[in-house]
Amino acid sequence: MKENSVTIPRWFDRHLHVRDGDMLRIVLPCTLKQRATGAIIMPNLADPISTIEKAKAYRDRITALLDGSDFVPCMTLYLTDHTDPEEVVRGFEEGVWRAVKLYMANQKGQGGTTGSAHGVKDLLGRYPVFEAMEKHKIPLLGHFEAVEEDVDEFDREIVSVDRDLKPILKSFPGLPVVFEHLTDGRAADFVAEVDHNIHATVTAHHLMINRNAMFWGGMNPGHYCKPVPKRETHRAKVRQYVTSGNRRFGAGTDSAPHDESVKSRCYGCAAGIFTALSAVELYTMVFDEDNAFEHLGPFLSENFLALYGMRVSSETMTIERQGWHLPESVSSQLIGTPTVKVFKGGADLPWKLAG
Ligand code: DOR
Ligand code: ZN
Image (cartoon, rainbow, N blue to C red; front, side):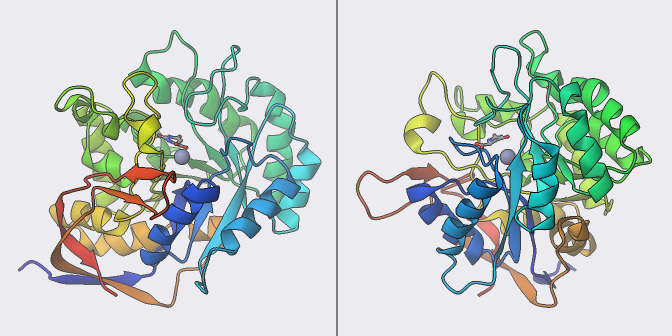
């Protein structure tokens, strides 16, 4: 018999973009309505969150919009070639940030994704920072994708595993690492098997679509994100680890809002998929399809939360088998403010988060 509801502890989004200004005002309430206890807030703003002062000010702007919610915005530091190890440690010890985000850029200053042009060009040059992080057990959240022009788009992740990640793990055996938005089955095998304190976040969209989705009905900007969705065998492999209950994998939506004007333009479409409005329901669909409800709670609400200084919530949330119509987009009433297209917007979803 199929269950009609599932009750799990309130969840935590281990990877979230909320942006700033009008966009922040539009998208933050979506995650609050999804009953998250908090989220890892990504630092890739136009002016990256690369200092203690910026992180504090950004946290204040988020907190000002919480409207009485107990949501915990867990800040991250944007690592650059100039980040000072002492500041990394100080910000962590003062409770300003809980982790450091690694984006990489190539020698031309081209980053692999939105807001990554200020990312690290000289990874070896960052080893003194990793050393300090290892000593203080500060988690490294890595966007592990090679950024060189001659690396095939669909191999960027596995090239980075071999070239960047493995040497880091070898040099810093005590460094806690989270492999962000994992998409490649070979990377999943590595994370599952390696003897290291390493975990991986997985998005709802990467569990649901393969690379064909970028070409449905012609080029489809709504399915373009970084890392790009991979071939079906990779999607299936990653999903197998997730829904079989492997504790090294946890939910991180990478919900990444972009205004329609930059998202749907035919040249230079921005990378990012917005799922914050229905993330819990999307993940629930995946576990339902795989008959794996016993693993939904750990994946959404438990796995490696301690790494971020979070506890498993003592409060619960219930997701019910109940159809509802997912809006096409979110926006505010104000003219000139962003409009964000929703992943699977316009579809009827079979699960609904109660209350
Ligand atoms: O698709 C993506 N969008 N991937 C990222 O890594 C960043 C994100 C964004 O900030 O838009
Ligand atoms: Zn991201």
